[in-house]
Amino acid sequence: MTNLLEVENLSKRFGSVQANHEISLTVKPGEIVALLGENGAGKSTLVKAVIGLVKPDSGVIRVKGEELPYGDTAEAIARGIGMVHQHFQLVPVMSVTENLVLGDEPTKFGFIQMQKAKRETAELSKRYGLAIDPDAIIEDLPVGMAQRVEILKALRRDVSLLILDEPTAVLTPQETDELLEVLRNLAKKGVGILFITHKLREVMALADRVVVLRNGKLAGSTTPKESSESQLAQLMVGREVVLHVEKGPGNPTGAALEVRELEVLDDRKLEAVKGLSLQVNAGEILGIAGVEGNGQRELVEAICGMRNRRKGTVRIAGKEVPNLKPHEVHAAGVSHIPEDRERHGLVASYSIADNLVLNRFDQEPFAKGWIRNLDAVASNGEELVERYDIRTPSASAPASSLSGGNKQKTVVARELSQDLPVVVASQPTRGVDVGSIEFIHKQLISARDRGAAVLLVSAELDEILSLSDRVAVLYGGKIVATFDSKFANRDEIGRLMAGSQGAHS
Ligand SMILES: Nc1ncnc2c1ncn2[C@@H]1O[C@H](COP(=O)(O)OP(=O)(O)OP(=O)(O)O)[C@@H](O)[C@H]1O
Ligand SMILES: [Mg+2]
Image (cartoon, rainbow, N blue to C red; front, top):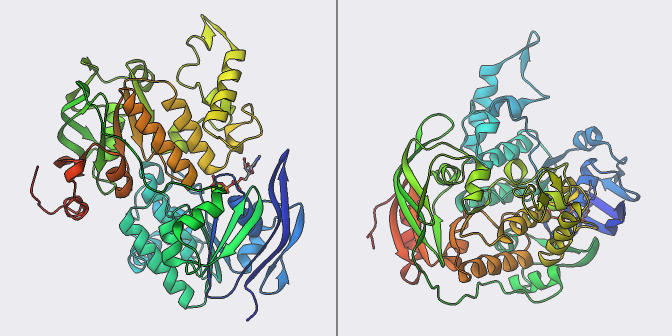
């Protein structure tokens, strides 16, 4: 059978970084190929070269046997390639429907038929099991929802090769399972699929073949039948990775973060957090389990000064804090790893070193009065890049040049290197490779062990269960049950997350 896609000896360099070095790869019709590799290994660069967003330095790309010109996205799309991007390409101020039909709107006499487009959107989201409100404005949506729009946009046209760059990073487990089913069905119809993920479970469940990159080079090629998850991890990282979390017992002392009777509205002015109370003690990790959209985002934003509280109190280290701005909450003792690093975590045009001091650039040792101490900023940058294994040629490079996972590591490094009494971590390992997940987990546990109160919000139930000392289940804006993690039962928590009643402990 002829190959749908053939990449031959493709190379691409960015300054001093050899992002891709003589990489060859094929995808056949109906074949599902998983592309694995550490953060910064060159995965996004490779698929961007195929769709024409990155111009290779050398190498050949063929689609159905015919050579594809470099850097010609329109031509790649015309030849039947579709792509779901790692970073959203949606227009924030436009609605879901407008984004879906953008550039290809159904028209009649030159007018866009919005009703028809909306019906088509509803039909698409139903067909692929990705529920979405056609009228919602993109910038109001949580990242998981925006990701669904990206996926639907790619599926709207008939494609013969579908490329997905970490499509599941921000999806819930249920949505992920649905998407995997969609991909399987597409493959059955002969669509070739090339997908990038850091989740080995998905690779095992879906891929016909696995291609692994390391440091811009091909590290190996295998199949889920031949290789176990830990073997894949080892192939990626080049060393053995501990896939489960090792931690000692917690040593909780008094309350460091107390939330009482909190009420918060969402962007549509509906009540998203409904009289919620919780307490996180110094020296413990409280994990919030829940399906995304049950008030997690509003809860975190109300604690961290990004959203006003309608009612209720928040106390940090025993002191009540009113509705504050984010930097004031930080000054009160709260580190925050936000769920959306692109929007709230980083300033893309600033250097990595500047991003690493973003919330204390005006404080000693990084400034004295009005004068910034650039040497201190630079040496702090170099130290954290080293310690947190942020893959970059230099801490003075702009944050925009980092790969997705390395952006996340930059935010984590800034927030966890400050030893504040409270850590609020939202999806802290989203998009990072298995080796870095292991590292970030260790950092969260050592924050706990030095006495920080850690509030962990994650869509990954496994992450919640393995890191937390106590687990609270959030449903419909309320905490419906709290468990000591020793007694937390996966099935029961799953049921509570889905809204069914269970025994409270
Ligand atoms: N526009 C750019 N300018 C400078 N360097 C870049 C640019 N794009 C990518 N790089 C560098 O190329 C290397 C490969 O990046 P790439 O985004 O392909 O990694 P990745 O495998 O997709 O990683 P991740 O899993 O973190 O998304 C990285 O070192 C990155 O910093
Ligand atoms: Mg990438």
